[in-house]
Length: 226
Length: 224
Image (cartoon, rainbow over all chains, first blue to last red; front, side, top):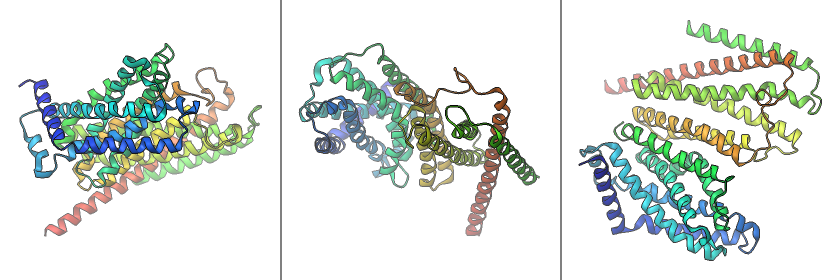
């Protein structure tokens, strides 16, 4: 079995396990709804300033809701010592990690794509005007979030205060991609396409994704095996 | 011997600092900003010391992962703690300057924000260490996190710079005008801060090594 086939097997396994219980996706989406509801009390959706903040608000929802999914990623393997079995399996740590990251990415994207229309209705935002570019930003931002979330999920799986530690460690590292995604999304949901002065944020997103994917794949063996 | 070098360097650093403060107090006020401008003699050296500490922490972390020698782990934690203290000093001096010149302690300016993000990153490093009991796992995970944090530093700095800036442009490179006859005092302060950072790191390192020895002896006593 090649490297990518191994990763694919792990992805399918994780997605199948999640689809049987749906616990991470359901709780994550419910949480996203609650935050969206709270935002509607905090900000008047008919004011122009709220429209300008749309991207920022949206990514706060994604970051909070995404953490719930990422927290479960390795924690799910703790009962019955599944994690030890996975580490002992004849596949590399990098393949295991990549498989899990892709599964998390699919789940995070699913929650985001369901939350997006809900956000549009609640906040009175016509978010479909720059649809392809918005999807590109969503994919790049979510991949950055997933890759950092997955490696730190592996890092924090066995430690005390796991649920608190993951967001405390990931959010500061995620500030550059979140900032870029917020800037781009605010413009795109307002209907303005990516212009030469905002394209730098696209570069930040791509650069962050490439660098951290490479570093994570390189270091994950150390994290898993010790 | 190591203690003597440590105390000697510490005494030297304090002497340089006192001598420098006396000279800086004698300098005339800056035309536009007044006396508060002189905070730059401390603000910039502590920032550079903090950045040096982050680089040393990275090197120590990589060396730990390669050699598995716990000395490097002790060095990484010592230098990260000292770096955090220096970065905090940088944030405080920057806030004081901002209160006088901008009228507010905190403006969400590029460099202030990136310094705060870096502070939070490395505070996360210490929190992670506290959460892990097992020494080998703690050292490994902390080293991995330190590498992740260090890679993020330039990305944070540049992306926040593109985001917004109202921090004065660098006085030393890039169009600034720092009086050339003030430069020696600045460089002496730079040296003093680096020395203080080194001495504090050495002190903390020794404490960390003693702690490890105590833990080892305790385990030995339990196994008897």
